[in-house]
Image (cartoon, rainbow, N blue to C red; front, top):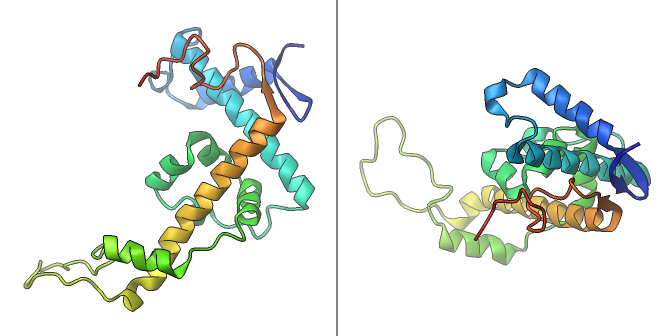
Length: 201
């Protein structure tokens, strides 16, 4: 048995990566994916490895916390737009498509709060961010920023959503660092030590 990674000492078989890749290729046009065996194809396999180990980390955490998928927030609540998906990262965003992962997200981030001064500071920096739109007839007078009390709930929700994603990402990174060991050839796609990493600054 070839092992791609371990999660808390339990193996993730290379065959599982093969199966996940085959399933992805079966439902995705070939033109949208890199060819197998190429540098980009190996990077795809590394990304799939990250996805599999992250799913295992989250499933183990759900079991430890006694969580089920029931009552989990909906995906649009956790990841409301593409900016949120980019913010949290592609692997975490893919994992959060699963309701059990969102239950873990809700539990891990339940104590995250946004202080009132952060709301006021955000409004001072972005006074028009939550202003009413001009409507169908355009602006007939210069726009005026809304008063803070009128937009406080929207700003609080916006900042809380971002803070919860950040807290979950930090937690997930720490748990993976603690539990996951990757075999050679299955390193993180962005690991500068692996030969297919082409990301440079």
